[in-house]
Length: 310
Image 1 (cartoon, rainbow, N blue to C red):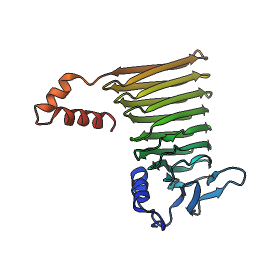
Image 2 (cartoon, helix red, strand yellow):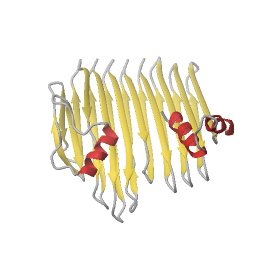
Image 3 (cartoon, rainbow, N blue to C red):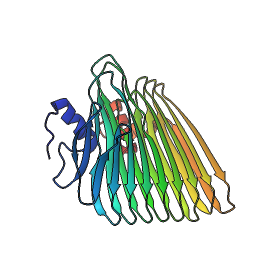
């Protein structure tokens, strides 16, 4: 379904964060534009209900739902608009679902625009969820600020994969993810962040591995260009026989700065926890090798960064 009333810039923003300018008929979705829900569709297995006590929606996915997708994009094109939105996902047992979220801000005015999305996932027994979230900002005047907060409660045998990307233009972001992982359940987070100019990005992961056989795999890849700064904080607590792994790989360029602060707490004798971190500049031999193939130094750097964040 094509959305009526969107201007060309808003359509481009929607395409950037979702890969689409319209959604297929029979697909569940909720489009939020400048602080208001402007389009919504539900299916037999996925219901979307606006909250009555706060901005946001409740998404209910029936037990046993298989291979359906729900889209919940947010667009801001009104300069100076600041909003906090609460979205709760209730995923039934044995469901297999993909959730595509993301926020795009187009700010051409002088006021700061800000979206804070607070998402809570309650994932039933043996359910599998893939969550895709892209953040993007454009406009050269006021700041574009995005502060995503995610809470995940994984029941026995549940699986949650988060693929989060900040693909440019976001001036300031604080990204907080908290997870409680039950018996034989697992959470996998893959994060990619690019900052430029004077931008700042901070990521904070906090995971409790509470169930026997539970697991967590956290991977952050980032590039800090210009005078931008980044901070990566991860805290994995193995409270039962479990496996946890966190990894921070970052490239610094120009005057960019990156800080990594890992913390592992083995509160059970059979908790196996690992952290890896690598922060540094692009190796000179990589650039030289690509330049011998005919690329300029700038083109070589861009090629390496694109491959790193792919």
